[in-house]
Image (spheres, rainbow, N blue to C red):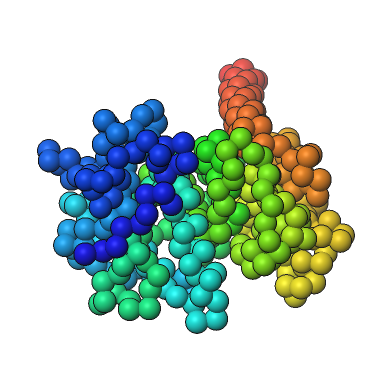
Length: 360
């Protein structure tokens, strides 16, 4: 039987002291009427009672496991679990840094109790993994299966159009997910196109929480060691204060969001050159992707977006907007976009009428 993850590691401090878990190997149970995993309603209160999540993987319920991707973190499989298509992520041990591997696995579960349409939902997790998957694994996580596409592939590996309506929609989805995470004191710390999955219905979902951090309740910043600050995340999207080993706050995600939005608009990599040179330039010389060399920023909408990006990637954390502020600005941009389309349609009709009257 898989070893359950300790309930004290998975529940908020204000929840687990009152939870009676003596009867279960997990704080959750499977309802007799179906396969849905739910928190026992008589044991928990408020929002916790509706969260779908289990700290045990029922391996005998896993079917049709096939590899869909792999990397330094381990492998991702497509499978069927309790009658539902899911993604199974196996986190492997790192021979170079075993501590970092363990931290990455536990960080993946920072959003385990959260449920939002723009965040990949975790269904179950276990510190034991089937031998035929990987012996050198720290643990495994069962998540909702979103699909095989991410924003990185759409931006750089496809010929799909990324017009104003589409990049505005994608950006809005990401910010909604971030706003939800930040409202629950979770900072992702690795927002980038590759970590945003896109469903068949064109819904963006934030994934890969291996670098995330859970802030103390009602606390906007958290101290972090230089080793964590420098060793986790993607350097091209990393906020300068984190590169300097300073405090972590939700504003670090806003910086990364700005870089990601720039990629959506331009379909170009944010920086070129040596990694160390880029790191130094971002911190010491405020190096940022250019908004002057791209025609996309010349329109009225583009100029407004360039101004928003400038605020998002400001070196001064206090000058960056919150996720809620960015969401509000994006809604204004979408409204401006609709007005521009209406105006263009109006003048097209007017010109057509004038042409008709002139030659009739």
